[in-house]
Image (cartoon, rainbow, N blue to C red; front, side, top):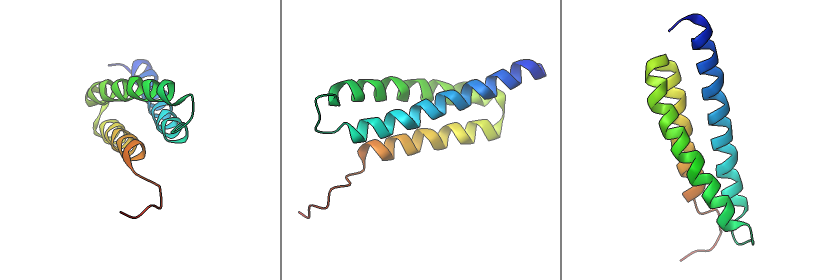
Length: 88
């Protein structure tokens, strides 16, 4: 992979990761609203894109793979963490 392709791959990974984190926040903020289903579909689409980007990042280098894996983990935690203060 030459330097130009590597640079574009890193930019692409950054865009996918940013979109993934934003979709996780939207999925959390859309909870209970009329847009909940759309936000969840967007999240699952971005989650699959970040998963694919993590596999592609293996070809770029260990730093990119680590960043993509971290984004994947943060997305899952953001979408599943219960922020309500209700105690069982």
